[in-house]
Image 1 (cartoon, rainbow, N blue to C red):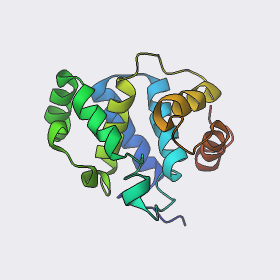
Image 2 (tube, rainbow, N blue to C red):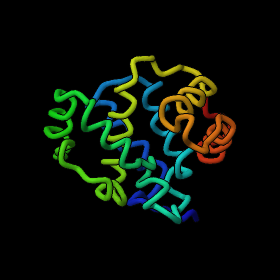
Image 3 (cartoon, helix red, strand yellow):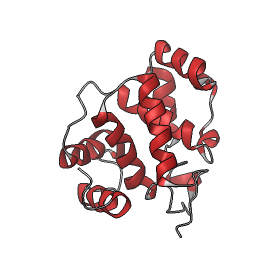
Image 4 (cartoon, helix red, strand yellow):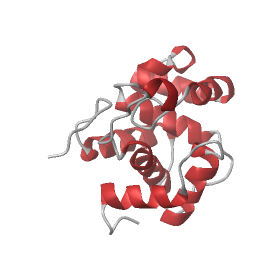
Length: 161
């Protein structure tokens, strides 16, 4: 039996939470897949513990302070209003530490982070891996497209598209 971290109890729970976030904040299956795959690439969907959260990232989707600042500074108030109404979180006042053991908040911030990107999320796995690397992990991050693909297959199985 796998051990889970970041307040998550199963990959199924992560999927249920991600579906709730997509239903509230908009998106399609590509958006849902991008969010779940991001959690796979960042924390093996909650099964890989972060040894250095203060320098590497926080929570299921591994946010850092710069990412939270960008969401709070560049995010749209209408999205913050939806999050407040649907989930009770006040995005402009959250702190990075709030994401550590709250998988729902981490997935919300993952969605808000991707909402800031004007380019559409690709419909194919390789495209989403490249999208993650360019926009989420960025050039500054140590992740690779290959790492993303391997993590998704490990977490979700070979049949995941």
